Length: 436
Image (cartoon, rainbow, N blue to C red; front, side):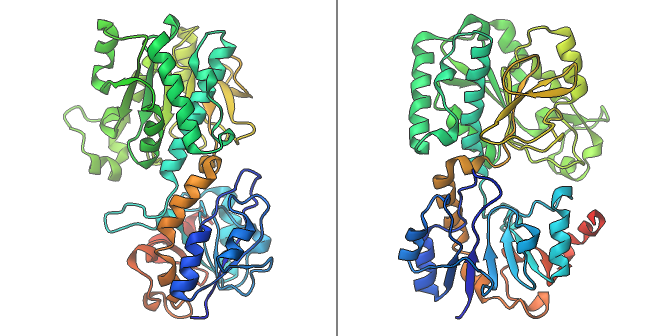
């Protein structure tokens, strides 16, 4: 099989060190499936060029001879080539305006675009993803942001011992330090001004599970959403524990019609029949970690209007930090008015002025909204991603991209993720014509 697969270097920002395939899996593809793997050299990729060369990859600046190109982040317009097959996170299916020019360019060049985000199994579950690692890194950074905010407020706290995720040598090192913070909470307790300390998780999927994996290293107890007000009223809590609340859809919305009951599938299909009630929980939370999937058809759960009224009534509200791991700009958390990055990771949103100021100081919640969190733990996230992707590559390499889409011999899972085929939208994505 004389198929050349190219792996382009990531150059969107200096923090993006991930690789879609790791050297060990490249070796497997070369020796077990007779594929040629070409790799653009990179000075920042988490695995050195030499590691790939040792496993049989060809280190080559020019990937033009490759018919299939793998990447992680978006590819610049001037690097797109005619009739190539591109596989990466395109961030186009919601009509993201900043990526529409690339979509149009791939259409002009008659390219085929496969989006990792849309590769799913028969149950609709994603097969190739960084979600859990976004949650892991996002929770580390959220706890770090909390420590910095409390330092600014001059409240002694153990969270200030935590660093940003990328500052640790490994995820193991980060977990070890957070366990030490947990030990301090257990032994010394938290400042009375922080008790009871509740952290809310919006969502329960892979992102949330990753975030909770970090949180659960601390001494915690779980409180169900329906019992939050009772929990506060009865005061049966401790300064030597922190408390976790996980919110599912049925806690966050209710039917508009009083006689109706919540139905998850109905909510997915008819969100206009439901109204949000999540803001009733916000006064109890010290930290909110947003992990939900959101589209504009769904309601917002933290609105600018609510925050303005809330901060007008409360000079010292409990809510310190929102870790918006989902990072939909002005989406489910409306005060996420911009994305951040690891070297400028947070801003403080002033609800009364409706403006953001970089850093931890000032009125309003601190917002952590880094849009490429898995890059902060590039080693672990690349290994996990590559393990899933390598199983799909042989069949993709064997597919016939020259004929009709129905006869290209892709697996059903990958076929679901083909947005463009030879420059035209497939039937699943014909709605995207409206974005053009």
